[in-house]
Image (cartoon, rainbow, N blue to C red):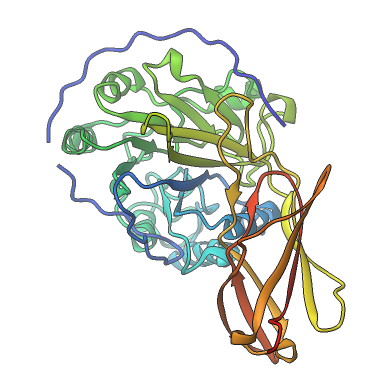
Length: 420
C-alpha cells in the first residue's frame, strides 16, 4: 500500500537558543548489545511504536509478534520505538512489571540480537498517580517513571551509531505533557551542539510534532501535537537533523521535508494499538525500514524510508528430497521504492532455522541452492551458513547469510557437502 502526501501549510517557527554536551545513555529492552560500526558505514534501523493493548488485562495485539518476527529476519542494527509499549495505568507495580514482561515476550525474536530503544508515552508515564491500592490510586510517578528507567534507561537521552546521532525525547513529563521545555530543552540544545558534526541526527518522541490531517475527527481532537514545535523546528534546522519519528496517533503519516527545512516528520503509530483511521487514510499496521547508504557516485549519504505492512515476510518449511532440508523465504511486500533513487534490496541477516542432526554435522552442511521465483527463476549465488549449533530435540540450529530481499519467493536448499 502506498499513500500520497497531502499538502499542509508551512508554519513559521520562532528562534531558540543554543548551548553544549550529552551524558544520558539509553538502554535496550529486551537486552541486546549495540554492536559498534565504523563512522560512515552503511546502516539499517527499524522504527515502530504504539503496540499497547485495548484495555486492562487484555493481551497484546497479535500483529506485534508478527512485526518482531519480521524484524528478527531483517536483523537491523537496532530498533527505535515511539512509546506505548504497555497499556499502563495499572493498580500495582507488579501489574506494570507484568506488562513490560509481556512486551519482552513478544519481542523474543530480537532479544539478545537487536537493541530496541524507546521514548516514553502516556501509557508508560502516568501523571498524578502512585503505585498503591485502593484501585483509584493508580500506577504513576514516581513508580511508572522508575519502571521505565529500569527497562529503557533515561526518560530522555541519546546514543551514537556509525557516525550518526539518535535522540529520544520525553513528551510526557508530569506537568509538561506534549512539550519539550525546562531542563530537557536545555539538555537538547547542548546535545545537538555537541553533535553538530554528526553525519545525520534522528529524533524520536511519543507525541507527534504534526498531526495527520486524515485522522478520525474525534481522535484528532484528543491528540494534540507538541505545543512548542516551532521553537524546536528552529533549533533542529541549525543541525543535521534528517527526520523526527513520533507515535501517539495510531496511524501512518509523513510530513514532507521540503515543507520543514529539509526535515521529514513521521507519525509511525502502527504496531497494534487501535487504529484511528481506515487504511486509505493511513490506518494500517506498519513499521518503517530506514537505510543510510553511501552513493558510490558522490560518496554522499542516501537515506531511504520504506513503509512495511507486516504479514508478508516469513519462512515456511518445504517438502525436500531425502538427504536435504528445504524452506521458503516469502516476501510479498515492496522493500524497494522507486523508480527514482531505488535502494538495493534488503539482505536478511536473521534467517534462523532448524534441521535434524541426521542430515549431517555442522561442518558437513552447506547451502547448495537459493532459487528465486517471481516472473522468472534465478539461482542466487553467494549464500552461506553463517553459524550452526546444537538445538534441543536432536536438531541443529542454523543461521544463513540470507539473500537480498525485494519481492518474491526464495527456495533455500541445505544438504551435505559432496564427499562428506
